[in-house]
Length: 271
Image (cartoon, rainbow, N blue to C red; front, side, top):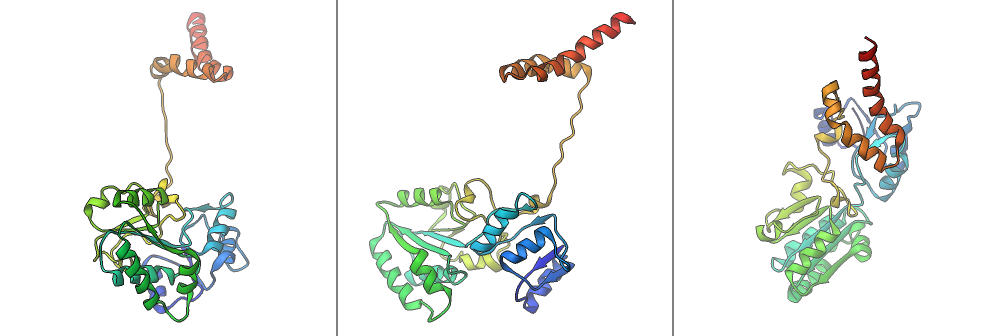
């Protein structure tokens, strides 16, 4: 197993060792994706590339996908909070935390509570760091959306299919249809999911949660189907296969079934 990281701290290298990584290269970004997909003099090509990254990494994964397996588009990161109540300082901290990952990160609150929206906007300004990506991220991709009801808020969330979705309570959690990972209640801090809760940190972004969940062991399993039919078995389904083939206008497909039984009759007659 090969890993890449431009600035591997000791704790990262220890985690890589525990995960079974045999080689770790100090590279990152789109050029790391290219190196892994096609190989270089020092980096061997891999069978599949998995993991999150910024928009350049996501674009690079899309470009190499026809030549090297990938998981899905995981980045830039995003958080969407659906809340009608809660501590505005806590919620603001969650938005700022996500925004500091990447200037292209998306951090949004959707709420029917105008007072909460106003207090959160003030809390975000108060907590805004002096430097780093968070200020640019929130200015370009952050926001507060006011809805007429909490029902409308959760409908917007399902349409967005965000990477990280934070909701007030279990009642709202039961209404979620599309999200990479759902965090329920004030104490389920999204940052805890990054490090310690146990869910995979590689999650679908940009609406990809409509069609799949996060990275799992299943992404590393190759499924191969094996099919066996007897003469009796094929005969029992032959009419359906032939009818469907001819419905598609594929006469050769139909004949592939018919010829087996025509030849069998001939061999039986000749014997």
